[in-house]
Amino acid sequence: MRFFEDIEIGQRRDIGAYTFTAESIKTFAAKFDPQRFHLDEEEGKNSLFGGLAASGWHVGSACMSLLVADGQRLAREAAERGEEAAVWGPSPGFRDLRWIKPVLSGDTINYTNVVIDKRSSASRPGWGILTARTTGTNQRGEEVYSITASAFVPMRKSA
Image 1 (cartoon, helix red, strand yellow):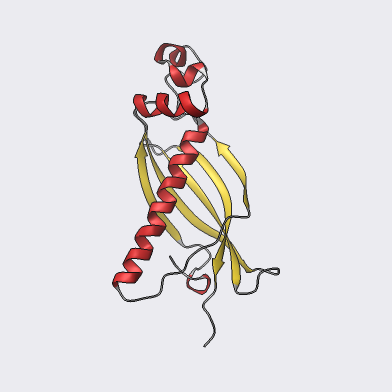
Image 2: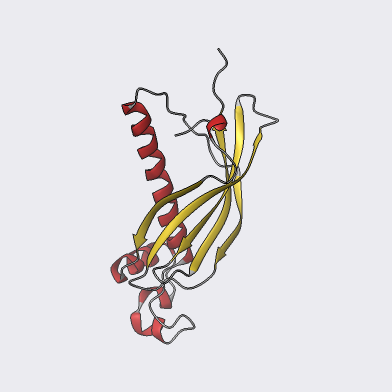
């Protein structure tokens, strides 16, 4: 992971893709969002979605999983180069969560993260707060998901 000083506003990262299968949609829904249009193809087809639809929480969870995996990959690559990897802190929250279009069985969503703001933390010396907008785009080029989230990012220690 990168340190606060190494991150620029406007930096963009493609963080990965996830394909929503009927099985994964139903498994997630059965455990976390058991609504009929997430659990049954016919119910989904007859709903406003027009097909078996992934829960918005599933779409967001897939995004989070890919963000974490991308951060772990960046940390491994830094270690392989003999560089120190930043260990990020928690998120103080998010805003503007939007489920723009339905994600249906068979859709592959590509997630992209763009840094939109960064500032030093007033309450936590040695830390900055990074804000980024993450979007999900389906295989037809349609944006289906977006969220603006913040995270505590460590600054490099002074020598």
